[in-house]
Amino acid sequence: MFTGIVEETGTVVETTTHDDGRRLTIESSFGTELSEGQSVAVNGVCLTVEQYDDSTFAVFLAAETIDRTYLGAVTSGDAVNLERAMATNDRFDGHIVQGHVDGTATITAIESVGEDWTFEFAIPDSLAKYVVEKGSIALDGISLTVASHSFGTDERPRLTVAIIPVTYEATTLGEKSVGDAVHVEVDVLAKYTERLLAANEPNKTAPAPFSQ
Image (cartoon, rainbow, N blue to C red; front, top):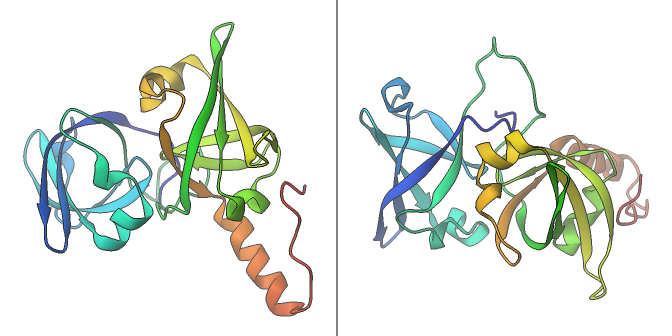
C-alpha cells in the first residue's frame, strides 16, 4: 500500500521490449535500500523490483499493465514519480493508494494562480461517479484533493486540483503540459462502498456522476 506522497522523481535510463511485456530501468537515489520483490509505485503504478544496484532498479511491465497505463510509451530520459510501499510505522500523510490504476486522464488546462497552480483534467466517464468535491484522488501517484468538478463543452467530466509549489517542484507535474496523460486511481473506499451497497440493494440505481 502507498499513500500518494511522492518520495522523489527518478529518470528512466533504459527500456527493453520483450514478447510478454516491457522492462524499465530507473535511476533513483534509494537503490541501495531496495530488495528484490519490493513494491515501488512508478507514476502511481505498483511495480515489483526485479534487479537493483546502487543507483538504479528494474521493473517489468506485463501486458495488462501496458494496456491500462501509458508506461508502455515512456522512453529513456523521462522523469517518473517514485514512492516505496508504506512501512507500518510511517506517518499516513496522504490517503490509501493501492497502485492499481483505474484509467488515464488528460490535462485540459493549467493556470498559474499566485504561487500555486490549478490543473484541470478530463477523466473517463466511468470514473466520474467516484469523484467528490474535497475528496481524495491519486494522479500519477500523487495524493491530491479534488477542488471542483464539472462537465466540459464536450460533455466529458472534468476535475480540478490546486497544486502548491512543493508538489509542483517535487513531482512530474512541473513538466506536464496540456494534452499530457496522467494515471488515475480513485479512492478505493468509494469503490468498496459502491460494491457493498450494490450487493445489499441489487435494484438500487447507481449514483449520478459527481454526486456528493
